[in-house]
Image 1 (tube, rainbow, N blue to C red):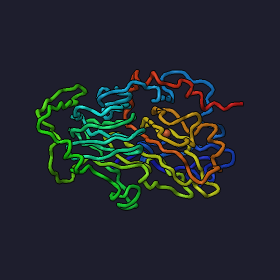
Image 2: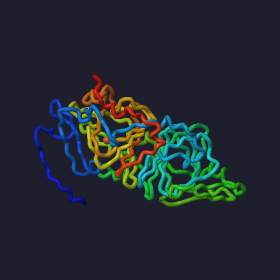
Image 3: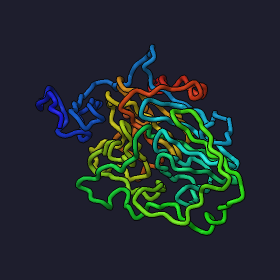
Image 4: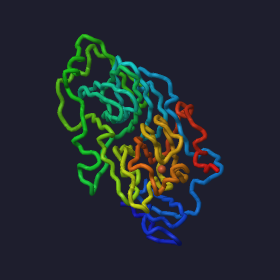
Length: 376
Ligand SMILES: [Fe+2]
């Protein structure tokens, strides 16, 4: 337990509770420690906290468009890292031909998120089909390869030198949000057995400390006839996530955590009902998440708190400055046109600052920082 320096105070005009029945004509801003799990303060401002008219310096909200990454790779680790720190490596893999070799990652567990396309995985644990919207977690050092007939676009998130875990669901109980029964695992099935061959030479590329080593086998090493235990790759489609929501309280992004890494989390935004109470805020609140960098990968749908964002784009909000909904979204802060959100997005929140690589910078939409400007 941390012994935070804290008490509870109210100064001036405030709401009785967060995100609800805001003082007339004010904009609420939340400032929080440790991704809002630590001490939090709510300010009630007369002006929009993102109402800047100019912005200089490196600390800026940024947006990138992975649709502009045109290189098609034949192997996952040829695909460049687009953002990273000591705990995480993110790649955008575009691949359209079945792999003729195996790969494994000795640097950490790997999470694939299938943005586009369908493919099949063959790995130490067997065979499984993946399609759009699937997460697939590969434990560190699992040998794997992909087969496909079409272009697949895959967001790959390495949990460097650590393990993916599920979040604690606390009061909600074990069947909430992601019921363990919806998780699928690879099978030693007919398709898997059919690819076993003792007379072929197979190459296995191992990534270790971000360098590749190569093993040659005189047989296909994906030759298990069975396996047992509680360590395995898992598949989860976003359609099997039952999102948390409240009719009265705008649930914070952390409530949508799907996987925990080491010093980062992966959250999934899936379609959910908007809040229905008249005075409840129906868009994300302005906030300073000052201990975390926030990355959003937009998968499908229309993104209700962002203007000019389309699937395949990434927004990056580094720790240390206020952000929140775009002006277009603010118009619907208390009244939405539809009953439900229509967005699917993968959020990566990192406790340590990320480095953005030139491969991603080349796709940057530089005007993003201006997209909060109110058009007169
Ligand atoms: Fe944020």
